[in-house]
Length: 251
Ligand SMILES: NC(=O)c1ccc[n+]([C@@H]2O[C@H](COP(=O)([O-])OP(=O)(O)OC[C@H]3O[C@@H](n4cnc5c(N)ncnc54)[C@H](O)[C@@H]3O)[C@@H](O)[C@H]2O)c1
Image (tube, rainbow, N blue to C red):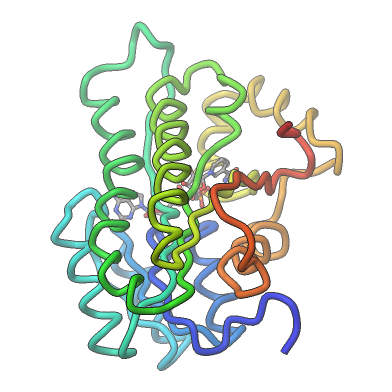
């Protein structure tokens, strides 16, 4: 089969009920993967699983809870017999100037970003080791790379995820596990909220996209995640891939 084929893969997608995570869940199912989608949003997650049929199982839960990660791995093994792909997409944060960000704001960004990513990586590791050629895709952000104002806790969590991913790429290569990071730019409800709250910052970000538009989760971002998860990317690990219309160019 062609580029990005995921036939036979079994994936966990965190934040898989809406936004980019939903687009990833849909594309993975379309390309032959089976998916355990984990999200706080029960109604949206259950509706998606019903629509996509046997290929998708939904588990409601907070990704910052290690027990939720363990349960998702158990669901993958019980329902699909294995786990070889982990997509750490979920995250939540609040945007305020540094001086106004509270301990609770920092906890939200770090717990749902960095620690959730670590939780799922550790919970998945025993199964990923068995898979022989497993892949993890974690989510960073241009907000971290660029130091976007009002995003201190979020930017810090996202850059910490990149650091963790590079270390894991080195340590877990011995188990055949690849670890890469995607930094997307796509129009989702999270971005709509941000655009409404910070219209000037949104306009500035949109103006910086050489390809001239904010991305579409399904057409622009999910295929890049699918590529990284596929065997076509088997010689790629420890990388940050910008899925952002060229807004940021890594050197
Ligand atoms: N959309 C963008 O332009 C953009 C830019 C940079 C980075 N990102 C990153 O891409 C990823 C997806 O972004 P998005 O725009 O689709 O986000 P979103 O806010 O639209 O969706 C996030 C999903 O995660 C779920 N979620 C949030 N907290 C959770 C928790 N504690 N437990 C379980 N599920 C939880 C939400 O219910 C939702 O379904 C995130 O990591 C985000 O930081 C997005």
